[in-house]
Length: 332
Image 1 (cartoon, rainbow, N blue to C red):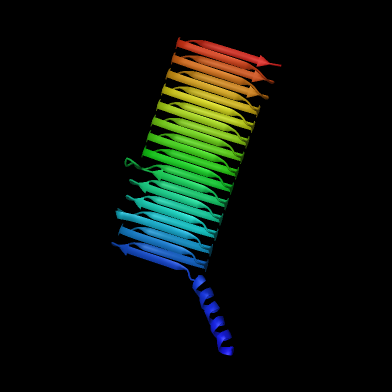
Image 2: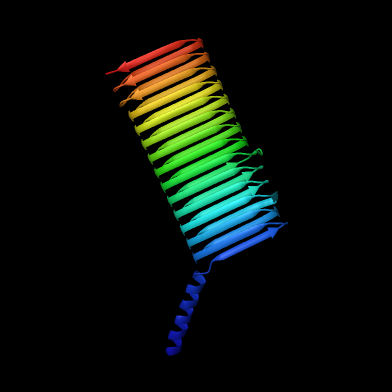
C-alpha cells in the first residue's frame, strides 16, 4: 500500500512539473541576429525564427499559457520585434518580411490577441492591450509598401481593431478606452492619415481611404456611436466629433480637396455628408437630441453650413453644380 501511495504521489508530482514547463524555440539563420527570451510562470510558449541578417527579437512572458510567435524573414535584414506578455492566455503573432521594420506588442491582461504582419521596408507598428479579450490586427506594406506607421491602444475588455495599410507612408492611430468598441481602418495609397479615438462602450468606427494624402480624424465619447468615413481621391479632409450616445455620422468624399467637419453633442443625432467633386466644404453642428442632417454636394467649390441647436430638427441640403452656398440654422 505504501508503494502504491508513493507511486501515485510521484506521478502527480511529475504531472505538475510537466505542466510547469515553459517552451522556447529560437532558430537563427544568417549573420548578426540576436534573440532574448524570458519566461516566468507556467506553460508559456515562444517561437522565434530569424532568416536574414542583423534582426533583433525580445520576448518576455509572465503568467500562464501565453503564446508568442516571431518570424523575421525570409531573407530579411535589420528588423526589430519586442513582445511583452503579462497575464494568462495571451496570443501574439509577428511576421516581418522585409527590411528595417519595427514592431512592439505589449499585452497586459488575459486572452488578448495581437496579429502583426509587416511586408516591405521601414514599417512601424505599436500595439498595447491592457485588459481582457481585446483583439488587434495590423497589416502593413501589402503591395508591398514602405514607411507605414500604426499605433493601437486598447484599454478595457473585448475591444477590436483592424488596420490595413497598403502603400507608402500611411499613418494610423487607434485608441480604444472602454469595452466592446470596434474600429476598422483601411488605407490604400500613399501618405494617408487616420486617427480614431473611442472612449466608452460599443462604439463603432470605419475609415476607408483610397488615394493620396487623405486625412480623417474621428472622436467618439459615449456609447453606441457610429462613425463612417470613406475617402476616394486625394487631399480630402474629414473630422467627426461625437459626444453622447447613439449618434451616427457618415461622410463620403470622392474627389480632391473636399472638406467635412461634423460635431454631434447629444443623443440620437444623424448626419450624412456626401461630397463628389473638387474643393467642396461642409460643416454640420448638432447640439441636442434627435437632430437629422443630410448634405449632398455634387460639383466644385460648394459650401454648406448646418447648425442645429435643440431637438428633433431636420435639414436637407442638395447642391448640384458649382460655387453654390447654403446656410441652415435651426433652434428651439
